[in-house]
Image 1 (tube, rainbow, N blue to C red):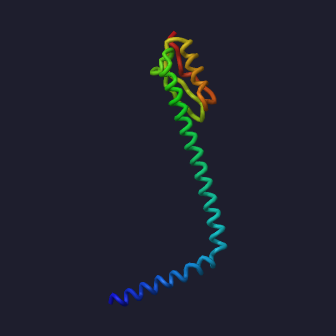
Image 2 (image 1 turned 45 degrees about the vertical axis):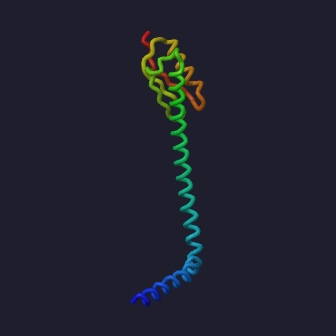
Image 3 (image 1 turned 90 degrees about the vertical axis):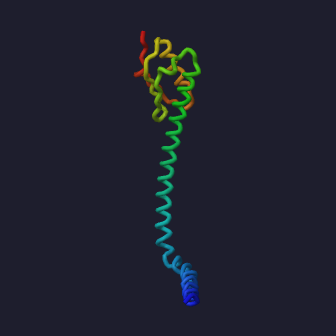
Length: 127
């Protein structure tokens, strides 16, 4: 029984090995066009995903950099200011003691690399 199974397995493997090159030749034109189109759509989807990931990383980096610059500066109440970034636009919100501190926070945020604009409509002073 074992010997007939081995012969049968050998026959199937041999037939498959000889048949594969022929099947590729028979369908080469259709599969190549389909494969190229599929590869292009995958590449476009991957590029879009990479762009979104880079944007998210950049926004996260900007937010972290702005927040850390606030915390490192003794003139700014860094813990009282909320920082959010979307597509390079930094939004500041919270309450700070003076208008001068509010203006300094906006100035510092604008100085960070990658910041396109700063919206401080939500950042109020208690004066």
